[in-house]
Image (cartoon, rainbow, N blue to C red; front, side):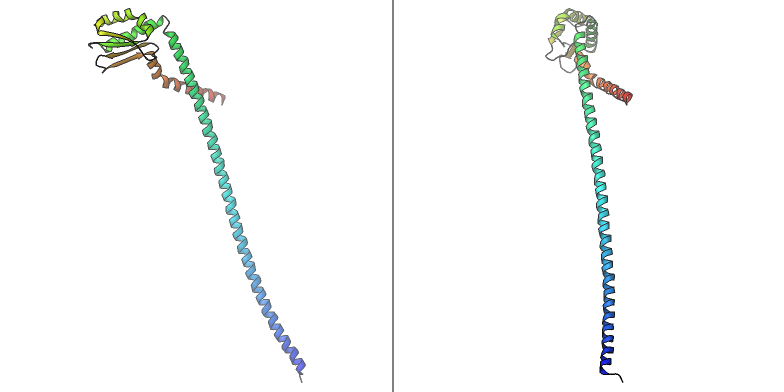
Length: 213
């Protein structure tokens, strides 16, 4: 016959066993949930870390590209500035040569050609004004009057004026109605060729750069 004490032991064992079983189940469930939470959190952190790394790499590449582009633009700016300086220096050098040319004997032939062109283009006008340098007004006055007469212009139809601008040499002619202007001045010829001078200089610099490349 089972005693009360033995019944209590059996009951206690059953109750404790059931409680222990429930505890193990809950613990297993909690462990599984915790593991899942940890794994999800780890994955989330990894994704954020990857995004940060990719963003940093992209930002670094953008910054690097900006730095390279800025360096290239600065180099082009310096080259352009240097070319402009050289072109200006070359133009001033050519201008100085042109000034010296006006004092040479060959300039007389050039001036005669300018006169012929002016009178040819303005033939038939009632009167014309010729604008020249102060030096040429004195030096070529007789030549101007002679050429004018050859082209049907009397002394009274001519107005020889000294230029207020630095035309260097040559002639600027205007008809009496101011509707026709013929510019054969040396300065205008130089200005008309300024772009050509600069372009040729740039090509020369580029070729020199390629040769040293």
